[in-house]
Length: 154
Image (cartoon, rainbow, N blue to C red; front, top):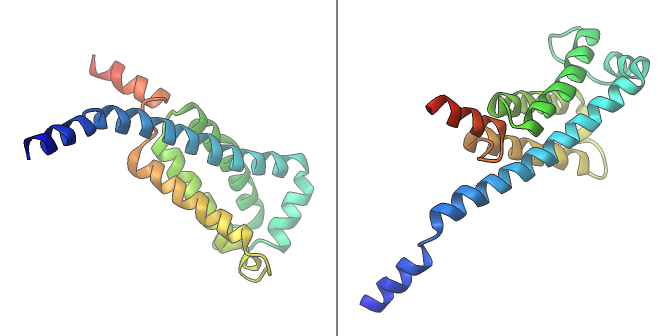
């Protein structure tokens, strides 16, 4: 039994470092991947603003908001929040904000549920789940948030 306990202690001796740095690397990968997806969508929106407004008037059915306001808010969210995520500052609020943008995209575009190939809906589901991971666990040590937290403790 003593050998088993020593082996167990040896196998778990680096758990804290692996959790801290491995989790930080994983959070960084999530931030880069999801942030880039939303940022690209925002760039597409501003590249042809008249088409974006037409989409919000004709295709997307954002609840409560007028189409023009929804277009401005959506584009702003897709351009500003990913930058915060990528840098790692205000990461949890940015991830939550992008989760809300993602949720509104799914709710506002009912055709996502009728396509033969449900890849678009699966992408939104995946992005939403990854954003909730960031909300729950934070951006990790490889983020400006971590540096600012350490500065605030001093």
